[in-house]
Each structure stands twice: as C-alpha cells, then as structure tokens.
Image 1 (cartoon, rainbow, N blue to C red):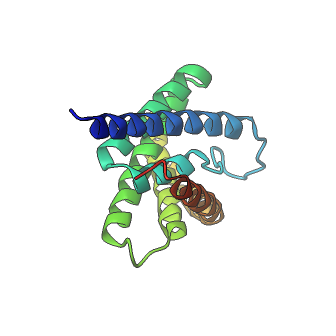
Image 2: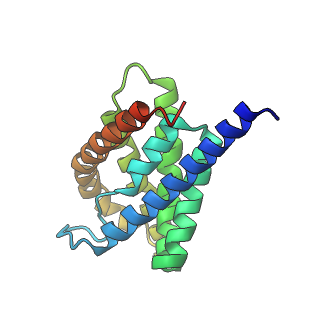
Image 3: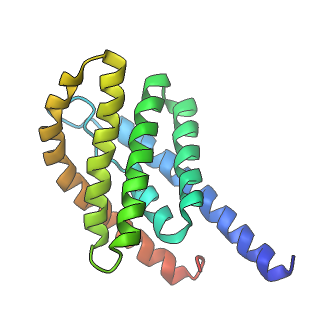
Length: 175
C-alpha cells in the first residue's frame, strides 16, 4: 500500500472516530436537555446531524459503522438497554431512509428535506420498538404528533448538518 492510500485510510478512520465522538456528545447533551414535549420520547434528534454528515462524506457501510458505534457506545456510557433499543431502531431506520433518499434524489431534495425524512423515520423506528416491547400497536396514536414535531426538528438538524458539511469541505480534510 502506498503512502497516499495510508494517508487516505487514516483520514477516513479519524473522520469516523470524530463523528462517533461528536454523536455521543450530542446524544449526551440531548439527554440533559429538559424538553417540554407533549409526547413521551420526542427529542431534537441531534445525533442525526452526525448521521447526515456521515452519509454525505462516507459510504453506506462506513455510515452504518458510525451509527452502530455511536449507539452502542452511548448506551454503554450514558444509557440503558431500552435507550439502546430505541436509538438503534431509530438510528438504523433513519440512516437507511436518508441514504436512500440522498442517493436517489440528491439533486432534487435539499439536505433539510432529507433530514426531515430521517426525523420521521427515526420516530417510526422508535414506535415500532415501543409497540413490540409493550405489545400494543396503539402506541402509534402518538405518530401524528411525532410527525408534526419531526418537521421543525428535522429542519434544525438539516441546517446544522449543512453548516457542518460546509465547514468540513473548507478544511480539505475530507476528500
């Protein structure tokens, strides 16, 4: 392997590590925020900033690694088994949806639109796990309210991700 490939691989490994660490910090900050939402479990989804950034710069496989590492390490460090299950389901479903939408509609949809889709899918993933855990599909009665909350949170996450992506492009760290 030549020096260019080693340098590129090292940069990619560092980027993945930094994104995982940032996702953990954002998850911890979000956990500490007292948000007055009507629906239990509704949050800002700050970790989706990192997922969206990973999808933009990395392959799907590498982005999946970022999400899985972030979810596992955050649950082990700050959470519980239930927080792990909710984060995993929401994180993976939003990753799949955002990556697919970004790949298919890259030129037609803005990063904010992709983020809103990710926010919606994150909520659906968490409701699926909740319905499985409590053995009751009536938990989906929260879905309309969660969909309403998903729009402004998705806009916020998309705006922040756009700023982060622009900054990373300027640094010439990512290729």
